Image (cartoon, rainbow, N blue to C red; front, side):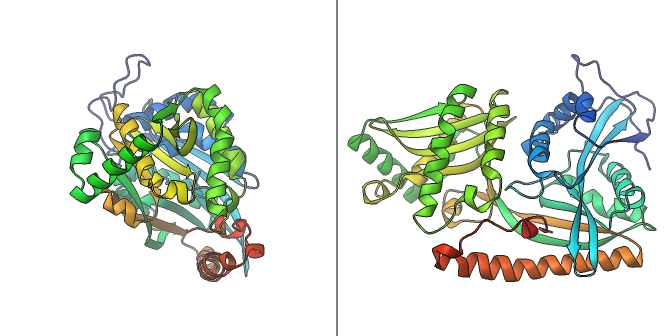
Amino acid sequence: MTPSITAPLFTDASAGVSVAEDEAPLSLRVFTSFEDAREIAPEWDRLVERLDGSLYMTSRWCEIWWRHYGRGRELRLCAVRAGDELVGMLPFCIDRLWIPVGRTRVAKLVGADSTVSLVELPIAPGFAEQALTLGLERLLAADRVDMVHLGPCSAATPQLAAVPGAVASLADVAEVVRDREAGSHTAFELPDGFEAYLAGLSKNQRSNYKRNVNKLSKAFAFEVDVLSSPAEIEGEFDAFVDMHQAQWHAVNKLGHFGDWPGSRQFARDLVHELAQADQVRLIRLIADGQVVSYYWCFVEGNTYYWRLPARVFGETWDQFSLGRVGLMKMMEVAAAEGVTSIEAGTGRYEYKDKLNATTLPLRSIVIGRRTWAARARARAGLAYADLLHLAYYRVWFLRLAPRAKFLRTPLWRSWIRRQF
């Protein structure tokens, strides 16, 4: 049932956009390229902004991701409108994955694999069920994919509550094949600024932080600066990458840019394009003129997206706890900019817990097409993905390969594309 609209969803005097006061049916328009979708990109990003949505669902981020990882896939950018108002954007792509009994066609949200990020559903409140129904009907009935994957999404994403209703409204076409917890992600909340956050830490954590900052300040001319202009960041980014990689090579690991195929060039393109919109921050800790730590972040609305850190290492530096100090200084910089939340990535870590990080579960939902052939392909695809995850990733990649330098190789693309 389409919701009745009695007032504009949003106000945007500059764009002159509003929803009619009488009932407006939802409509779906699908774009199969970013070139064709260029006309709605400003509306798309305004929708994400008004919903306080994720950087990872903005048009620019999705287009850069597609440029690097879209080869061999089909694009389905689903724009949902109530009257003339854009109320939902569901950027999907369709992948064809090998399974032991042939191939399966899987629709997933753009950005859901090949890099470390969370995806979500930028849909205005009250329209999630209807928008999802339209999107799922297009993908399952018209495109005839075997399954649609929603994830990895934070369990706190309110739009996920609409999935059961959308599937029920398509009972002849759709069924939930899998709905499970898929790890976790962390965030730091700074609603009242850095000093209030610092006061909320345990006495031990506050003392350790202040002591290490004092040690650095006594031993060196210690300072923190922030690079944000395109020229500054692009000129420094390779130095950050080199420091990050050296830190991980020292413990016989490949580091982010070695683990994830194509990630170095993807990161460079993100930095190049998003820095022009003032959305990139490279925070540096400097001791006697030497950069000893970096924190690479993006900013969207009131949120920092902490991507990666880097620091020097060795006996001289380990005594200063540069990792903890750098993280706290990054939060101080973010709070000074008016940021109230820091998305701190996937996984749960003890040091983040001690610094009062909020840990939230991730959800992964797979919706299948209700035919015996599609059901068989979907289940075979999920079973193969589970086996690959266990045998390749958990046993080989995490346990065996790190023991010998010559065994270290980037993550297999076949595993990356099967994260359900």
